Length: 460
Image (cartoon, rainbow, N blue to C red; front, top):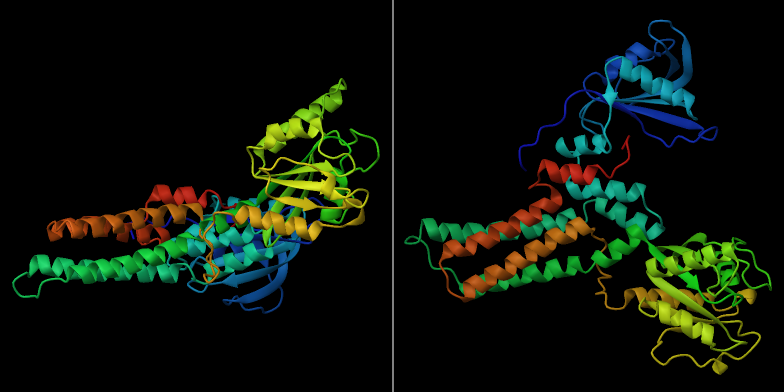
């Protein structure tokens, strides 16, 4: 790893979400050489409680000058190296809310600590060898997981299920590089290299890279989720569809066209993928100024959505208004939802032949929702390489590094095939090794670390 020094000083931050009048427990975390001394200044443990590592003390937090009581609390002590950062770490477990934890944090800052930067606790854990870079990123994924499947993949990354194969690929490349460089330095003392064997070994490495790369789309879906817009003309049952799908009454449902005046949002999980569903106002020409705003927002929501559910009324069939709306959204990934099939046969709806994904629903009767979810999963997986046997999902940064490694390995194969000198073989091979190292952290720069850890919350 490049020489990057661990930032000095003792850092402090609130490590729990602060919700006014709702948090039952609030934690203020410190890490660094002064963590325990600051804790002893602020925390008074009655009786003969031992200030030993991995103990929880009961007591009171007081202002060191005035001795004014701030809170009745618990103190958790974790001495280096048996802590998250491999530094001395203490945590004040206070009563939740805003005032108490902010007062405790302020006292820590007044007595020698400084406010932690976003992700600085995890950065110290990485720089001190507690975590590799893939594990650090998995912690951010775990905190931000929006579905059980996303949580499972984050935990897999935290357990090293990405780092292990990447390190193996890097080691294989290093072994090949050593063989090549040995021939360069001791050509007369060693047998010549078998070109075909080297090419075969690199091809196997490239195949493994492709297998891991195949999880990138899945990882992106799990992290960012899928934005789905329900669009259509008024009174086709868009709000009923949202309510049936989300099993709630998020949207107002009436027989009056134009009831929905704004975009109504619901968060769901479909097949492990977080889905943000947008129920939009019915798209039509109107003189109502408020409804006009809603219609314009509907058009913008459809344009920004990853997937459009174009909803039509089975009782009315495919109308001229439906055709106009379809013309506006047909460039987006689209599923046609024929609703109200309990009132009319869906076969009577004559829709454009280029629409391939069609689902029939009776939203008011909670019918067809399972078919809709199946169609959504099929749509978002079209064109994706499946890698179900790999228990991980890489992020965009990791994918970019793997693509660099793959390109370099392909160049090595081309160089060997062209029978160029051995020195040329090593150039691209070193680039591949460097790319693998960027993923786990063996090769890293300060700018890369800043890019990664700036996305973390303060306190993590």
